[in-house]
Image (cartoon, rainbow, N blue to C red; front, side, top):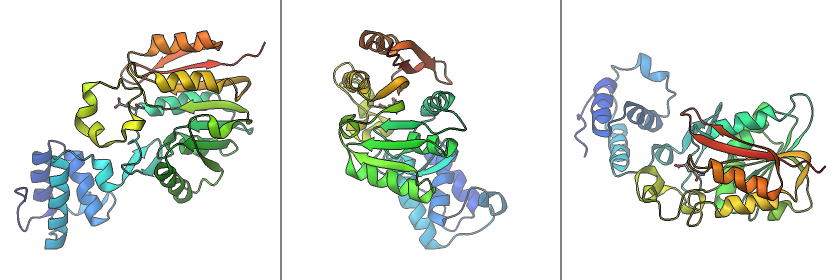
Length: 282
Ligand code: GLN
């Protein structure tokens, strides 16, 4: 047990769990998950006493969190953009910085006309579903090499009622050969294979194939930059996420491959996070 009080009210249960975990929000999300309640429930129920089964289930989750398991894998959900997404250990946990990629994608997609969009390595479907939600007329295809990840993404599309998103399995551009897109987006793996962070925190529990990509972290980005040229319409854009120290290399790869209007954008912390370029056939 974690030292949680034995017949506590919600307030004291949360206080002791928050102290053990060092994060109030983690303590709240795990308790709401056990109780099957929305966050608003907490405001009016701080004095409520919980039954022993709920307390035991909560204590078990707090223990697992203390042992390092990410909150999103313990609850099975993570918020991204305006969406509540199912996640599993087969998928990366969506990050707030990836919302920057969604913003940059939306800037390039008309509100009132259909456009074709591909999301490479969709994982839980985060990017594809956020775009589909904001641009209902867009034809979005979401690809992933992992069948278990695609199953999670498809359940998200169903639950969020975004049936216009198509799902295909395969290695990067392979399942899209012969198609043409106005926009290709990706949050690929980009961490250096020997980066010590891979052995720390939440990253330990996430799929390695979604995180690490060769000695300089750019193996998959190189492939995506090269192969996307075959599927872009003239004037079409490639946008991808990368590490804070990879902006210059990302731009160099895009320019060498022949993209125009190459740029890097920063995340909310001011770090290089997304690069892109446009295929001008001229
Ligand atoms: N941004 C993530 C991290 O550094 C990595 C995600 C990715 O490789 N696409 O934790």
